[in-house]
Amino acid sequence: MGVLFFVAAGIIAIRNLVLYYLDASAGLIENGTQKFLDNFVNGQVTNEKFVVAMLAIGGFLVFWGYFKKKEDYGPPDEHEWRRFNR
Image: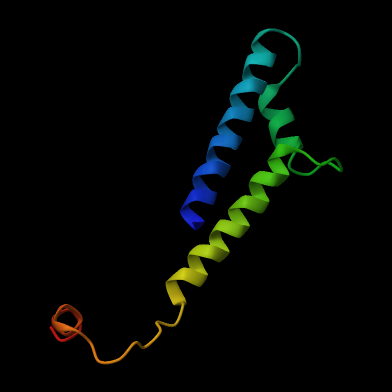
């Protein structure tokens, strides 16, 4: 699930960067990359801030899934025994 958040955040960030680049090449704004980076720190709620939040949530989910305690359902079966006793 955390990887899904990373992928979605990457898609949103790349889409916004491309859209600002197209606006800059059409002459609608002066510098698309600067506008993209400014949206991370301005006072408005923008997609770039959602990208940062999605990366944080994805990182938390990956961390939580990696260190989650495995529940004990009894003695290990043959596959688990071979996997853990190499």
